[in-house]
Figure (spheres, rainbow over the protein chains, first blue to last red):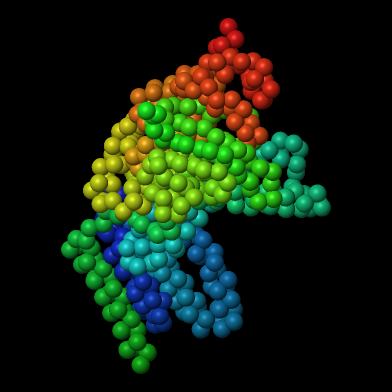
Length: 241
Length: 245
């Protein structure tokens, strides 16, 4: 069973109803502005506001906790090293760094993960991202799971024949062969997929049909979020000047 | 007056780089509307033949004409997808979009059709294969039979006159197989079905081409060829169980 393109259960959230194109148009400038914030109060404000967005997205709790946990794990060394290096004076920069990272992640999650992955790619293409990139992203994402399925089947087959992964030459050689086989199978599958695309008239041009319709609420949302991010940035800049 | 052939192949030979010939002097004609079985052992060249007919593999030796189009000519090869539909053995190789709608619409989109017509074709194709309302489903989560039907819908949305089916009953349970049999029986147009499922061939095809080692070993009525035990066994096949009784 391949697991791909499952939309998260956020269909009841207001963010899920916003046109993905406007969410992407909001994401780019907002991300840049938030990432440039330096003043702890400005960063704190960004974190607060992006938390509000996150709550509005109504993600499943487990989904949120795993992602926040992963970010905190990544930032843990900085939270430890900065105070050790600079003493009490290092605590505020460490917390500012963490808050800014979380604000960026919350913003990205709220704007990207509230639409199905395929819609985000279509939106990107509608906004001018070359169809080749979006098609490659779609195919890579889709067949990554097929590859994972193949790997699980191969692993089951070798374990059923008594293989145990140990620190031995035999184990390393087996892992190498399995990897090589997966690569060869992927190449063969890619050729078959290309044939199937050709048989259905694919001529190298990447076309997509989307049912996107801009509403006033999409534009308003985008303007408000970018304006708030710009306002925080202006405050941050002025407070440093 | 001879009946116009939808598929006409004369002296077709094909060799993959660095390999033994996959097809050798293959010749046959299939008139419009006929359903023909293509049988043969593994490695006989069935899939290669399909790829040559669909214009995917270049035809350098021999003559091929499908719906009056010559796959050797680039201009005519580009028109083939509107006339020839290929359903591949593994549906996962044909389902590479995020939703059933996107997958079935892929072909009509490439034809440059208007979005309204694309939507109409997608709905009609899904209705034909018995999957109305499946537009927003994720193809990879479907059961084997449903995936096969979505793959078929994706081809039918192109409205081809000729359908090439490569092992269509693989991964199908008995009910799926019966439904496919009925569906193909009701579907107009020319069909060439490559399969190891000889009972399926008996049920759907009146004529059979036996391909072995890239050559046509037999071409004739399905019942006569499939009942010929020495012919079948000499080519790595066997008489279907229903004919042995």
